[in-house]
Amino acid sequence: MNSVVVRINPALKNIRLEDLLEAITKVADKPIRYSVEEYAVIFSQKTPEAAQLETRTFRVDPNTFQQALESVSTTGVTRTNLTQTIQDTVRLFFTAAGINVLPPNGVFYNVGTGVLLVRATAQELDVVQKAIETLNVAPQQITIEPKFMEMPTDAAPPTSASKELGFDWFLGNTLLSQGQRSSPGGPTGLAEDKPKSVSSPTPLETRVFRLDPNRLRENLQKQMASDVSTNVGESVRRFFDGTGVNVSPPNTVYYKDRTGLLMVRAAKEEFATVEKALAILNYSPPQITIEAKFMEMPADAARKLGLDLPSPGATTNTWTRVLTAEQMQTVLRAARQVAGADILADPKVTTLSGRQTQITAVEIKTIVNGVKPEALTSPGAQSTNGVTAQPYVTGQIPVGPTLDLVPYVAADGYTIHLSPIAQVTEVLDALTASQFVPTVIIGAGGAQPGAPITGQLPLPIFRTRKMATSAYVYDGQTLVLGNPMVTMVSQQHDGQSTTNAIPEVGAKRLLVFITSTIIDPAGNPIHAPGNEPFPPDRIPSQPSR
Image (cartoon, rainbow, N blue to C red; front, side, top):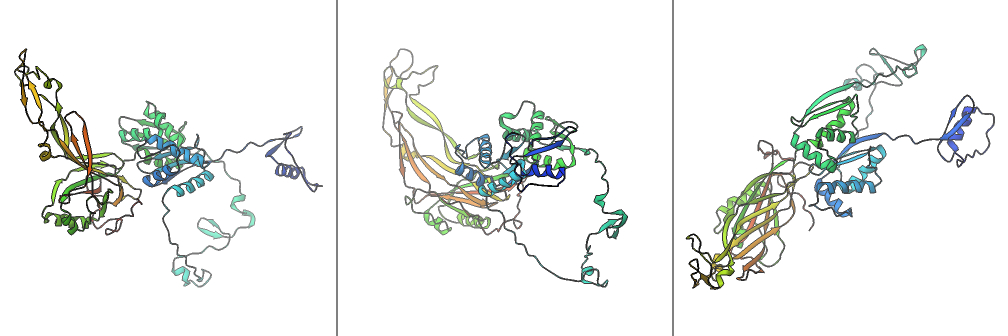
C-alpha cells in the first residue's frame, strides 16, 4: 500500500465520510478497497475478481482451417501429422492470439467434424471469433429487410389496424397482475422495490445418454491424447470438467464403458454444455462410397466424349475435370458405344470421411528377379528330394490399378474434398521376352557335376502410369483424372534396375473416373436426386494450383 498514490484536486470539503472513502478508492492509481472496522478504516489492495467463463462451440471447415494453420504455424503442421500435433497447433495459435488455454480455460478441436469447443471469458471468446474468421471461410451473408410502419394503436376504436393484425400494444411502464394491467404507483410501489426471497439451491436433473463405446474412446483419445487414463470413466469426467460442467458432488457423472451408458446429474442449464461435448465425443464421420473406373481409350474417342486431353508429352501435370451426375451418365453411355474404349477395372469401396483409403484391383504375378549365384559355377544349382533345381530367383508383384485417397466431407455436409493418387502397373510381356540369354549350371544332386544349360532369362519390364491431384466435388459428382506420368522400369541381370520417363501412348489414353457419394448407415444416398442442397448443374470452386 506504500506505493499507492491518491491525488484529489481540488480538495474536498464538507462531505460525508462514505463519499470521501468512495472518492479515494476511485482516484487511487492502483485498485484498492476499504473496510470500516470498530477501531479504524482499513485500506487494502483490491484483488481482481475471477472472470466468469463461458463455453461456446464453433464450426469450421476442417480442410480450410488446417490449410490456414499450415500457413501461420511454425510447428510444421501438415496433413499427415498426428491429430495431437494439430490439437497442439490450435492451442498454440490461440495462445499467440492472447487466449488463455490453461485450466480452467480449455480448447478442444475435433479434426474430423471441424467442431471447435472453447471455454473462456466473454472477451476472450470475441477474440476467438475474430481469429476463426481469419482462418475459416468468410461467414454466410444475410439480407435484412426492415419495414417501418405506422398504424393506430388500441387507443383507437376496436376496429383499429393493429388489432386486426393481432397486435395488442402495452404502452408505458405497465405492471401485470393476474392477467390485469395497471399503472405502477400507490402503496404497492414497483415490484423490484419489494423484498426478494432467498433463492433455493439450483435443482438438479438426471439424464442418461447412450453412446458408442468404441467411438467415444477413439474421440476421447483424439481430444485428450496422453491425458486419457486407463479408466475411461475418469477420463470422461476430466473432459466434462474441462468443458465447464460441474462434476463435483452433488453433481455426478457415471459412465459404463461396456454398455456405453452415460448418466449425468447436473443443473438444467449445464445440460446444454453436456450435449455440445457429447456431439464431439460421440461424433461419427459421414460414410462415403467411392466408385472408381479405370478406362483406356484413344485420344480421338476421349475428344468425342468432351474430354479435351492434352497431347502426350505436352505437359507433366495431371489433367482434371469435374462432372455432374448427369454428365457422368452421359459420358458412360457414350463410352460404351465408342470403339477402342475399355474398362480395365471398376472397384468400389465404402469408407469414412477423413480416413486414408486404398482401392486395388490387382493380380499377383510371379516374376524373375535374377539368377541364383550357385547356378553360375560348378556343380551348379542342386535338386533336392527329387525336385528339379530352380536356377532363377523369383518374386511376386501386384499388377493392375490402385487408387489411394483421403475423402473429407466439409462442414456444409455435401462438399467433398478429394486428394487421389491413381496408379496402373503393368508387365510388358512383349518387351520382356526379348531379354538376354544366360548360361546356368543345373546339377543332379550329390557330388555329380551339373551340365551347363543355355536358356532365356525373361527379366521383367514394368510400365507405371501415375496421376495425383486435389479437388472439390459435390455429393454424387465425379472427378476425372487424365494425362498420367509414365515411367518404364527395366530389371537387369545384376539385380539393378533402370527407370526412364516416356510419353503416354496416344492410342491408349488412361482415364480414371472417381465418383463420391455420401450414404447413411443403411447404404442409401443422403442426398437423393432432385433433393440436393446444392445446384445439381454446378460444381464447387476449385483450389488454385
